[in-house]
Image: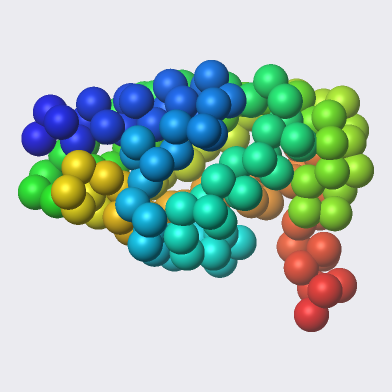
Length: 140
């Protein structure tokens, strides 16, 4: 399963290089994303990262763990970047954020075909000076 771990490292390198032109080298065209803010498909995945780069132009990902088993690969990641553009309705604050995620992918034909993730949205927005949970209630 070393190939799956290498695929994740290559994907992270692509993100750290901010080179989403290489998305098709990592992500299946019919990519399924279980994150509620990312639609399915490689185009939606590419658009999501464009929005992240616009909000956090210096974003970097550190890989802490990658575990592979069968057609699944998971990892624990830490993101850091400076909030320099609008992000989910929050205008640029100039604050530096650090947040973590745990991600699981299903790999098919050497590409990321399906994705699940968990991250601390409350903690992320707290660093921006926003009460995420109050913001969610206001939108309901």
